[in-house]
Length: 161
Image (tube, rainbow, N blue to C red; front, side, top):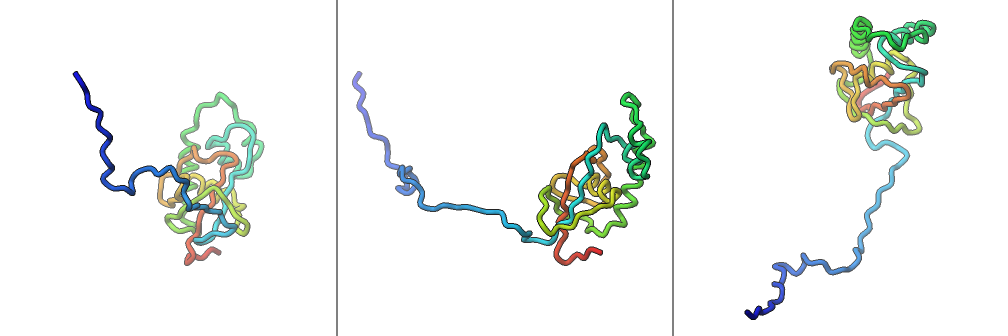
């Protein structure tokens, strides 16, 4: 049996083949030192030693460092402390001068305002995912971690106090 070798068919469009030529266009992007949309308001949980559960967060909010540091490692999770913290976060979220929904980032820039109020920090962290702050969502207490930072992007027309 003789087989006849046939050349490969031509591509239907001559522009779609690989010409093995280096591209002449270079696309680059550099991040600027200013925001292109709105302003940033940074919320950062302070670094604390040990575990950070609801009872300890409540003690920190109430200004009781001795209670906050005297937590047993084997103590069961306190459902009452979770409930109290969630209620406190939900109530405080309604008083914050933030829009009901806002984009967030973890990058702060020079000129961003920094929130020093611990209850506001805890509230924003519990109501933020990695991309958005939602005032009316259920608080995620696991998102309150030492050192975590969220920068809420405030729309240009929104005024802060």
